[in-house]
Length: 276
Image 1 (cartoon, helix red, strand yellow):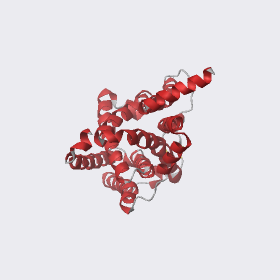
Image 2: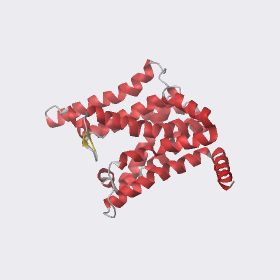
Image 3: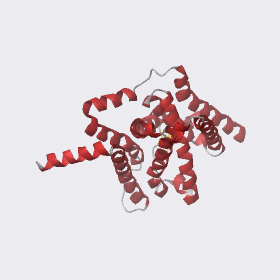
């Protein structure tokens, strides 16, 4: 009886505050793993560093748990349909897959111009903590983890429930919380630690811009989690590769910033998009 009452109470709380419950679970899952990796970095314990990629599934775990509690099988089925929604038209496929591939080409061109030689494309197959896994394996890893692992939650659950109050406002709120979700990285992942406090603020701004872009893409594609997950995974595949280090990443970030500014200028002509 006690267990039943506890489950009923949890279900009632999730039903009243589903988005809050989602963020709490997403943070708890990912930060628990982040805590292990921080302890490993400090030499307190020995933990597999590849757990870094498991932490990416926190948003999906949270989305599935809350959806199951408040929507049951019907809710999970509806979420699943958006995960595999592919009938979005050629324009959104071009945006979802074509634009990150164009950014990859830009990174290759920048690398060639700056180094005087073509890059070894096998470098796209190098990933932190796992070494050289091959281009296809690296691509699959990025799409599975930081693609679907994040997007089923951030866009597929949180933004999906918050956009009615103004999609830009929802995207900004999620962007800040999404950025803070990465906080453990700044205590164990070398490239994040190198950013420092000022870099963390810049990172929050950058990831909020990304949140606006992905929210725009999610809405435009008819709420296709598939499209935003592919874009996110492909973008990380490109931007995290050694080929895009330095100038390449600066160019990629600049393109995204300009893109988001254009989106915001268009949204500003529709005030409800900004405020609800």
